[in-house]
Length: 247
Image (cartoon, rainbow, N blue to C red; front, side, top):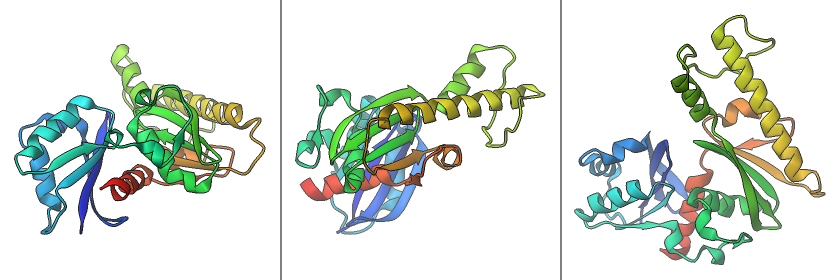
């Protein structure tokens, strides 16, 4: 039987229809739209099928958005759950002090990635996060400023610096404002990302995978100085594993 799962992020939300582990349909939209009247009901209607399971599972880092979805879908007799409602330690050992401080998206990413045994997951989202799975155990991570949110904040905080689209075409310093900004962000995040990878792995004397996901994954795959793979479905795959384990 087909089922619905989703991932609620600070910037965007993704809702998917799946059969077992196969993604049949996927819709991505701005998270703020969740608070519009009946918006979620319209999204669910777009992917609705007969004989659909009534339990819907989300990973969420936006509690108010999840609460709104629960209220909206209750009208249609759907039961909305969040991945932390379940004992996730059955699926992955989490070696940190307080699991409640760890975002659900980062947990399900690690659940999906632990098949590699040793890996580093870099998520280019609202924040840029680095999560370490060692010997199949979640060991912790690093949180750095998000690229798009940093660009937006800089533009909103200054009178003359514009918004711009980041491009991986920067061979020299800028001769105009946008090229200067592009150089700062490309070169700056090149240094930040590669330095954090080196700090994490300097004493890690084993083979490991670096997995990239999120908005700038493909751009920075060209910049990271180590072998990487891109998986834009890693979060949905992780939520799907939780669904199939507990529901």
